[in-house]
Image (cartoon, rainbow, N blue to C red; front, side, top):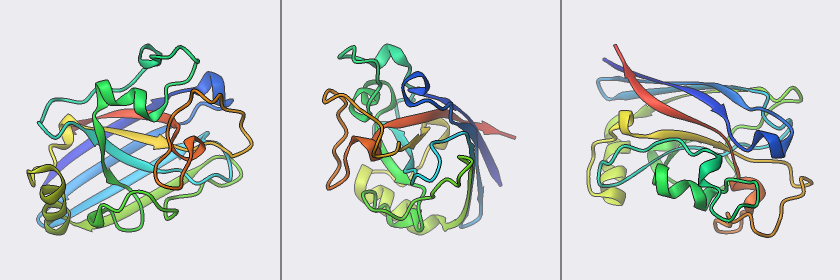
Length: 185
């Protein structure tokens, strides 16, 4: 059994009016990956996309900070995270093993901005789809970061905040929290 944990800290909190934070744990046991994420103080009554990001070449991903705000609009948007965090890899949705990212089947925070997510994933299926997408079946969780995304549609975002993914706009993809995944034993 191999265990990983991420302490998830706020990102863009000065602009979105809440400081989202929480923890994520990942437990690999035989052919199962158990993912548990609990978040507090996220934007209430809002769907929150959540994923791990990383580099397909195995480079270690790091969390984005305000230093990644390349266009100096005060927001670190999804595109600006890529230089330090890599690309979106695996979603934490209703079926992470399918690696289907743009959709509306992610957790929704309650009125207090809390949500808890637990999913037991067939590891071999996830690894097979990961290999198709990124050329290796090794998830390398300790080289990844987790992002929590999503703000209410009525939050005023400047046009400079990029993040369109399919039919989903920057309100859906704006990062609100991030954590480095580390192996714990």
